[in-house]
Length: 300
Image 1 (cartoon, rainbow, N blue to C red):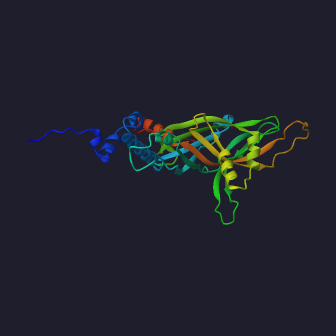
Image 2 (spheres, rainbow, N blue to C red):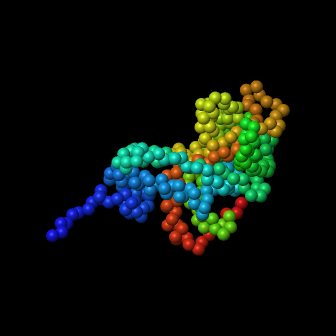
Image 3 (spheres, rainbow, N blue to C red):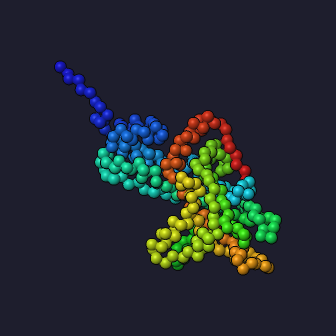
């Protein structure tokens, strides 16, 4: 006589459970993490694998739009090259530990570098004396401070503050697009994050003068160069600031009046919350299916 025995979820090997769980989108997986510590760890592994797959996908490109609100229509977008994603450290090999790792996963970020636009694309900026003039958004070759260090080509943009201005504003929009046969033909587009950040005069001055000597100070300065464009800290820009001396000094300046200043902002890194990137990408899958055969053409 054959005895009948029931097999529960705990009796299944990890490979089968992972195969079942991968059928669910990430938003449906998150509530399942409370079932057990084992399921919690397996779901974290699945989510982390998905993040790495999305960020390294050759068919998906991250593009950044960063502009002053008055120059929205004339500022070009930038394709961003993927750099790396912060490593996710499992607490141990046992899947029955680390119940707090879900919060650690939320704090992982992926890093991208904006690349110079093709062609001679420019933006408008106001003149200190009135009116508007062309200013190119170009690339700057940073040769590095140490001899033998290879230079990095960074996208740069000039900004100017008149004596009465305490800050300027930067509107940033981060999209993930699926490119078509040509680079400027987008088959789909999903917004990952957007926001408005104020770049203060004092912050610009401190970053332009902030040359740290000790290692601890260097790390602190790197963190200060990161500006978040939203309160949730989904999207941030790490900027290098260089002072400019090509602005004409006004003939008459009050004693308590700040001088006109100019700076060059170099886009060192685009920082995107990895979980936000994954969730927005998965939400766009239905749009990809519904928009089959349609394309988006971006002209700048």
